[in-house]
Length: 81
Figure 1 (cartoon, rainbow, N blue to C red):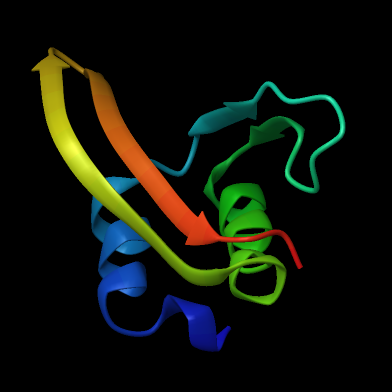
Figure 2 (figure 1 turned 135 degrees about the vertical axis):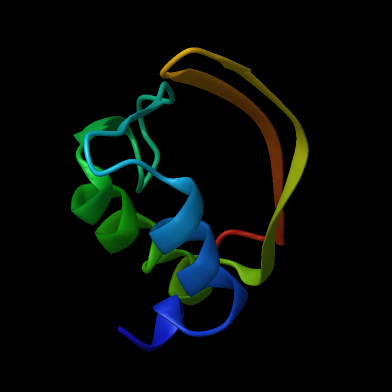
């Protein structure tokens, strides 16, 4: 997956746990649903450059308590292709 090179590779390999659960609540969206495990998240995020132009994700803040971590992120892109 060429998407995992550079900063995206760091994001997925160093910051995301293998057992991560990511939920996108929209009903009629290409990434809708609950995605279990890091590999499912990577596969869905890899679709982003084809769906939207100028796609980027930035971390606002992170809170860690024991083995639980909350991350507030912002994602932005142009249009829906």
